[in-house]
Amino acid sequence: DTAVSQTPKYLVTQMGNDKSIKCEQNLGHDTMYWYKQDSKKFLKIMFSYNNKELIINETVPNRFSPKSPDKAHLNLHINSLELGDSAVYFCASSPRDRGLRNTEAFFGQGTRLTVV
Amino acid sequence: AQTVTQSQPEMSVQEAETVTLSCTYDTSESDYYLFWYKQPPSRQMILVIRQEAYKQQNATENRFSVNFQKAAKSFSLKISDSQLGDAAMYFCAYRGPNYGGSQGNLIFGKGTKLSVKP
Image (cartoon, rainbow over all chains, first blue to last red):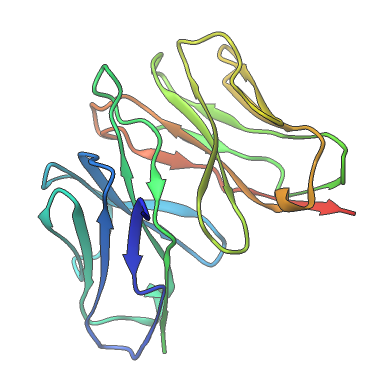
């Protein structure tokens, strides 16, 4: 009955490879996100999807691309991986309040990506 | 742009004692949410407490409570009767309205690492 689940939990890969991280939420939320947590534990938004439409795209290299086959899934695909991409990546989703504002984010367990 | 500042990189508390973690934020909005998240070594992000800006009453969740000072843009977290399981990174976060450049981004502070001594 996991609310937000992402796979894999750990991913070790070589530079230059292409990899994907999958995310699914069973909470019925309209908005899903990808966050990156760096080695200093700083969390930063990467992407946000609302009803399958990209609404936020921060200064993220275009090697990163979110893919949403439906409202419950938001996968992250990364091309040509670099050493600096090593981090923990979190998927999250948010409900809306009566005023249709996004409220708190529910997070997946994170994927630790190590590029060697 | 909105910012969230946690000025205490590390804090320590004795088991059963009380500790307060500080957070300040900067925004020109009047309607927003504030949150405290806990991240234990398992790295799971766990929501501890949330506060809606238009509510004057401070939020409380069991041993966790906040001191929300809207005019001062301050949002501190008080943990009472600290337990060993409270040891974790604590992140303060701000979410603005769903419009404008931020589109309701959840913006995090840099975190405070809390240690609990037995």
